[in-house]
Image (cartoon, rainbow, N blue to C red):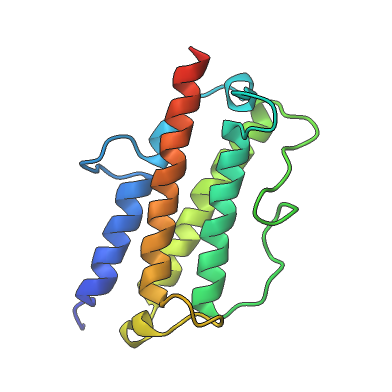
Length: 160
């Protein structure tokens, strides 16, 4: 059985360190939302500012978007609308919050699987817009997780 490509393995580690594994930087995205109540996730630090629930859906969407781009899949399969900043459910209760946190976890698993199956030669391929390579998009989605993890941690601190 061939050994996994070192770059793919490293990108998977980077994704996991940002999302749910032990990382030297501190809290992961999953760790930042663990144990939050719907009320805490809905709290807004100010008018027209995002809340934690919106950030969870936004990060889930971008995991989906990068996986879709890497796989060359068509748009339209993300279960929430609109894209990029999906709406919070009409009934934002504990079941809906748990479902959206689970959606985030599922999108991470699907992204990981897409990256794991990616032929190493595709890491240097550019996106359809020609801006970013596949490797840069994978690294970028991990950075995106960390960026929004910082926002979530700040929102939690502002609320307390």
